[in-house]
Image 1 (cartoon, rainbow, N blue to C red):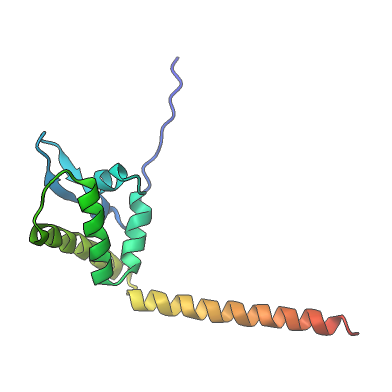
Image 2: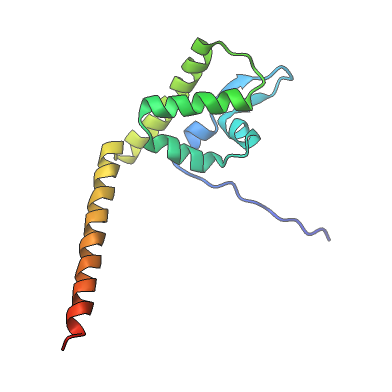
Length: 133
C-alpha cells in the first residue's frame, strides 16, 4: 500500500483572480496567475490579499513586475499593462462582492488599533494604581 500525502488547495474569495488565465504559452499550456506566482516562489493567495489591499496603481505596478519576472514572454508595455489592469479588476470585483471597500477595511483596522491602544493604556493604569494600595 502506497502512502500519499494529499495537499488541499486553499479556497478563497480570490479564486477568480488566482485561476485567471493570463495567456497561452508556446507549448500550448495556459499560464494562470497561480502558475505565474508559483514560478517566482510567491504564495498566490497571500499575494492576492496583498494586492487587494493596495491602491490600484500600486497593485498594478507590483503585478506588472511579477508577471514580467514569471513569464518568458516579451510583452509590450501596453500589453502587460492591459493584462495587469484586467487582473486587478478581478480583485476589485472580489472586494465589492465581499461588501467591504479598501477604505472600509482601513477604517475598521484603524478603529481596532484605537481600541487596542485604549485597552492597553487602561490595563497599564490599573496595574500601576493597584500597586499603590
